[in-house]
Image 1 (tube, helix red, strand yellow):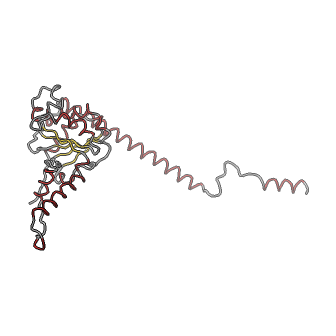
Image 2 (cartoon, one colour):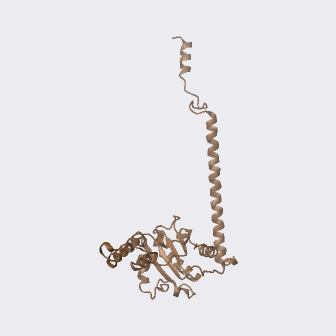
Image 3 (cartoon, helix red, strand yellow):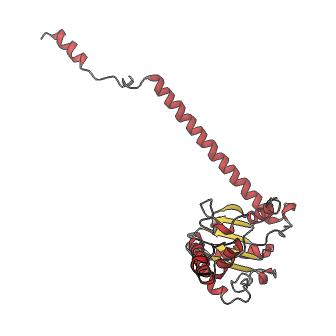
Length: 271
């Protein structure tokens, strides 16, 4: 092989230049990917800035409400709020200091009945021993929330603690009680009539097994999830549900705003 043939052979075996695009990717596709990546970055930045702006506005509004600078939030009309439910994520329910502070705030606002719920029963273990010593179910003084406030409404505060065992297990116990009552009280033999259980019968059975209680008018959810986390469904027929964010970052102004918004809502219960 002569020198010219050798040069041609070496040139044919030379690697592809670094500036040349791979054969499987054309230059227009590379430009398109760069444009899409740039658009994705701009959208992500815009959403982050919007969330930051919303958080700043929210914190500012809560501060103004707490300071009493917003006049419409100074006086709350809680005539429609007969019962309030607080659903807390079980991990955050271990923070009893925050729970007591929350009860204190709600008591000063004039709330009379509060139902505390977490699915694992952390609140039950924390507060039931204190409530067992209360009289007539008024547990405000026994929960230790009255020492830090000068308002007298804590004396009339009623606190109920329930957990996930009061959900499906509660309805199963009530159903068993209804069936046993029917079997023991009805006529026997072929003349036994068909059972006709009413809503009142189920309510009395739930109360008999210790799983009854008033239906909350408003439910405040504290935790990462935007759901009631297994709160007894039969007590949520007409309940207004509001997500309040993490318990560790709860704010007095946010609670006042939630109660104010509830007082302005119109609920059509039908006939």
